[in-house]
Image 1 (tube, helix red, strand yellow):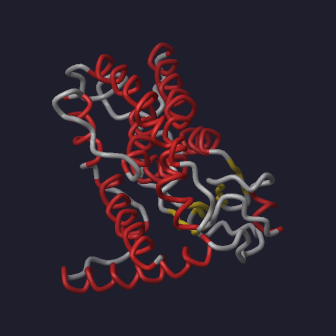
Image 2: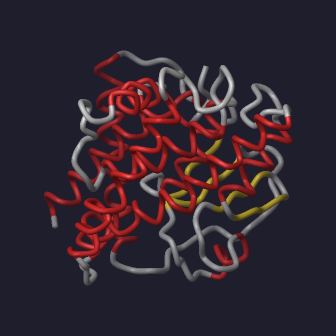
Length: 269
């Protein structure tokens, strides 16, 4: 059902799959350890290749990269994830993303940066299953939730994720007080709003999964790398909704890999 990286390989036995997963994790760890400590990596020059799968540059620890990855997988779009640090200064990467932002994408002879631009492109190129509704009101609400996730929610996520996870792993100066303030003063109002909006709904907009769910869940998932679990007693609707979203394979498999990666980075220093 999901045509991400893992679906481009034939089925394997559980033991073989676990061994391959551990090998891939170790390769991923070694690559990212180099990235954490320097801003420039070697990125292959941008060349048109109509036969290659789409290439997505970034790390899914970023909610914006994860948004695109999950969006693509929910549509059954095959892609290769190219580990790339934000701010990468190599000329090859800057040809794809002029300001060094992640995510960036190469699809055949076409390159594009910015998560919202990329998902809009993918929706137009691969309209089924629809993840951005056609109905004017539902489309408007979907884009509103994506904007909420990308701005207000990420502004709260960022100080926690950077100061508690990314910054310490890279040996950068951090501001623990900023993370504490975001968690104490900014995070609860966001959860309270979502609790009210979600209610007994399965999805944020309409009766099926949309970009709204992917964008909002992606920011929450990144935030949970850097804060305590959501209080189920205080936010039962958010807890139920989030459990269902994170159980979807497109989220579950990536988050499992992210947690292992962060744990290895923290253990090795």
